[in-house]
Amino acid sequence: MLQWKMHVQDAMFTPPFPDKTAFHNLIDSLGVYQGLFRNNAYLELYSRYQTRIWPSVSHEKTYQDLFAFLEESVRQEERSQLSLFQEQGLACPETLSGSFSFSHPFSSDLSQVGISMRRSPWGMHVIFSPGKNRSTVQQMLSAAEKVCWKTLWQGLEPWFSEEEIERLVSELIRTIPEGLARGALFYRETYPASGAGASHTLVYEFKKDKWQRTVLDEEPLPPSLKTQAYRRKDELILRTNVFIGSTLPLFRIDIPYRNLEEFGLHPFRDFLSDYSVRSVRLASGFTSDLFRFATFWQNETYQVEGLATIASVLFPEDPLSLVVLPIWNVTENALQDIRKATRLSDPLFFDRDKGLGLILLRDCPIENAQSVVYPNLGKKLSAPVDPPLTVRDFLESR
Image (cartoon, rainbow, N blue to C red; front, top):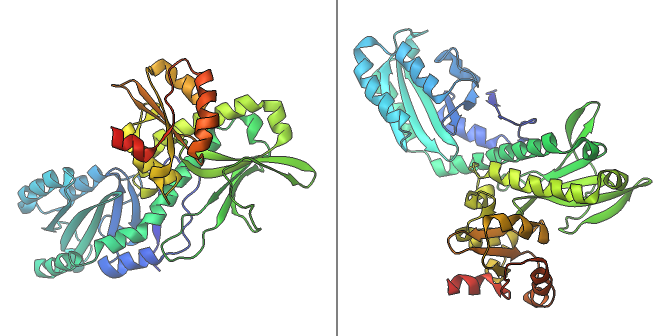
């Protein structure tokens, strides 16, 4: 059976991926000699069969190492052709292919090797097509061009999304204060492949001197954006959401109330707020559609140009009906005061040129925004707050 490996930088756990259909489809379509350089850096995904062609291949190899290997392996008479191929390849084109004679083949089947590169959503994907002669290799390279790449990439999307989620989990685990970590449980749902059935609930817990991840084998509490309290045996537990950039409630955290009393509710809120910012900074470099909203993050707030996109994450059914509160004469120094005066679940936008701050209210009818949120926020802030309006009205007025 073909074994694929994944190297996840900065993550404590590899992505759970019980459905290997996407891998089988890759092999059926493109053969066993392939790999993917994550963000055109390290070789994150590859087959163990790759060692037949590239003996020293490993997760530590980079995209540049690939070309260094080719320089050592391609016959001298084809070095000028290789130099042009390398120049084009390092520019990370959409597609690139070539065929070369190897100077140290392990068998006659490897005397000629075709190389096909294609930019994927996650980095450069590379296929080796070994053969006895150039004609055979060219046929294999041509066949690779006829596959449905969109379908292959869609199959890998859940797996790479899981990888990025695990990086965010690890950031949460690494930064949670010791006083909160004791007895805390983190929950998240897996990101299922299309048509692969229901997702699973994963639980992260520090026990036996290390963090462990397990699958929840009981019925979870119904998801809620509100803070919940429940009893676990004789202990009172507080459950609250952990947001990525005040936008995506990706995790839930259960903490014994006695821990919160010792640690302090305000420091706990500060931790959740700080993580919200740290996590969206990290997610802004991700490639999965799940985190597309994070690309609008700039410094400590979102760009106003991302308002519609982020509203669609909060309320996909009718994002333009959500309510915003404009705040004028906002400076960089005032942003922290605004963030402290708002809920952790309400994204903050900032137009520096106009001095305009914008709070996107989650799950708040405009009537409640007018009668409660607007007057209360006006009392807390020195900057003038405009009456609430819908996202649709705000965008039409710009």
